[in-house]
Image (cartoon, rainbow, N blue to C red; front, side):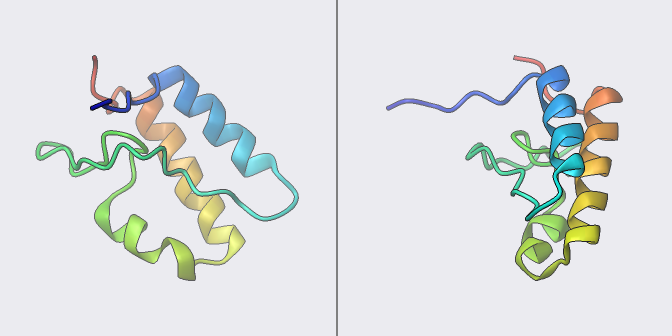
Amino acid sequence: MSVEAAPSASALAERAAAARALAGEVPSPCVSVCRIDAGSGFCEGCLRTIDEIAAWRSLGDADKRSVWRAIELRAQAGFLAKP
């Protein structure tokens, strides 16, 4: 069985900045590493909270960009688990 690896903090921050800059539909941050860190409350793969994950489909593009910005800041702050 293969276990997906979480992206690096810098890769996730770069992906977040790129996603926020897209003119069209905002892509999901999900990278199929769906584990919530008990200490931070963030997904170990995409750095979203449970509430952000649950609400994603109903959010408008502006709110999705806000979530991507939060992900970018969390990655830069070091919330991404180290391998």
